[in-house]
Image (cartoon, rainbow over all chains, first blue to last red; front, side):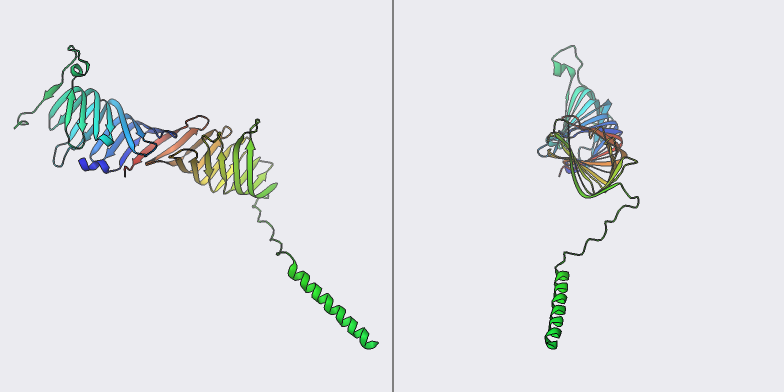
Length: 151
Length: 187
């Protein structure tokens, strides 16, 4: 939910490394990250903080696939996004999924190479491999809408 | 004549008594009671120790403060109370370790027990590691524990079981071995 962005971020993992000078933390093995309704599941998550402000500025999840779920707004259905990598920019309220990206909500699906998700508005932008590379031989984005989804 | 003699005796007694009282009032504070030694009597016992160790090239590598040190030649151990050990790494990467007690071994390994706090100096935000036990080996370069640890770094708090860090690098990496939980509060 949009108001979740001010909540603490918690996580669990098998192991972790922390660079004592840069503050970069790498959680590895069965990684679960939570912030309110937002949840990220991955094999490895890298967390970068700003040494000046100590703010968490970037989080990158890698998995087979990496996955995040969120509820875009009150009473909305849960959105699930999977991909090779999930990058979270808390200060821009942005989650970018790259590589074999797929969204699922209420049975509707969309696939593409890259998905940008605005965690405040719940809006999503899907980029196909063709759009990103300009190579017409690359795949296009695909959309699967359940009957009755569109009024 | 008789009166004069008595008078002299009384005068002498008075003077001696006054001197005795004066001496007693000016004596320094009562000698401190004997030091309270550990049960096992050490070969060497020191209080308020302040020790700095230097490398062969004269560079300070380790500074140790302790409220008491008991050294046992047979076992080669020294037991420190309230130790404050600073691992000096050219003032770029110094680390300070405090605890309730510590044991220093012949091979310079150090074990810390109870309320162990490892603080990174010279860096902001500093990494602070807390545990109930920590071991320092390899001449102060490797810090390890198999016990639960809590690490605070800026707004991050990380808990785990088991930790090791090699301090002999420009940017030491703390490895947390099991059951990691991570907490970050943006506010």
